Length: 172
Length: 279
Image 1 (tube, each protein chain N blue to C red):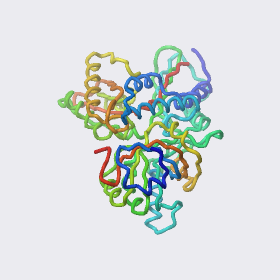
Image 2: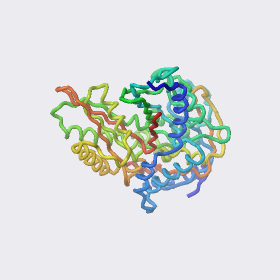
Image 3: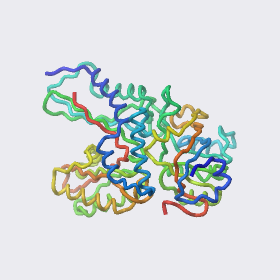
Image 4: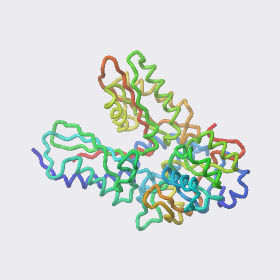
């Protein structure tokens, strides 16, 4: 099913674990070090480089883009490494998480509480996912290199709903 | 004595960095293809995505996976070969630095495990050197992703734990972390040696081609037994159920101390980027 991020957000209660979707819209990459920094900024009540409200976070550290390409390989990384930071992200408005692999019970519970969704991308198919990227821009933490925050506009990004906000998980 | 310039090695390593990150080995493609049933299940779709990804990577020169890995090199250098210029480790690191830059591959190495400043050229590589007969040099590169590496384990079992102890350790480890290692996986098991060498044994096990048989009949049977049991776990492609969980299990062994039985499990994701060249 083809979906825009807005459509997904409007009916976030309706998408069940196991549903295949092709997502279009603007997402932000953030992995280990970016999560750490975002959390520190939140703790210190400082301004964040991205708006978390209704945002979509993609656990991804892309390859650099060659001059003739929009982006390099850009598949998902293992989500569970971000588990300790995720409830705070969801409490601050993040609605869509994209990554690969299992999540902790705390993340599962926070997804229920915050009416969010965890989407699974296939790991190890970063070239295929790069084909779905229409624009790619550095947003913050440039010194982190591949771990910086990038804004990515995707078209028909192939995903599966992994954990929905009605208590269903593909990993149960 | 045959002489070669270290620059030749550096140049070959530059090419290898691009080659292995753009071209999935044929044995992996064949193994993945053999499980496709066209039944529109989640697992089947993932296997198809893996093959489509391999096509795109090869044709458009986009890395198979964004995690272009730690660069591991297994070197067999003939004792009648003289290297002129840099030493072998420097020659390889220059190749990695140039190759990862030239082909726009991700630089994934930080200079310190806690301070975590990126070295910006994916060096240093891990280089393992063995001296052999002859005047050739054999270079095997394995670009190893972090996700599957994090699903790997090492345990100092003791002799009376026996095969049952080893098997339980392997199965429990895969149950615990297999889903995060981008299955279908290849499982490398090292048994014997000591604490330091057993991890390398497990890593070397990953260099075998899928379909290759263990030369030792006993361990060949044990590989088949583990393969069956791991696939019975039902973890499936990307941990979402179905088949297969593992494409292969390979065991490497080594003599060890009378009090010890070290076991290491090194997990390889489906994006198994490896190649051997001989100069």
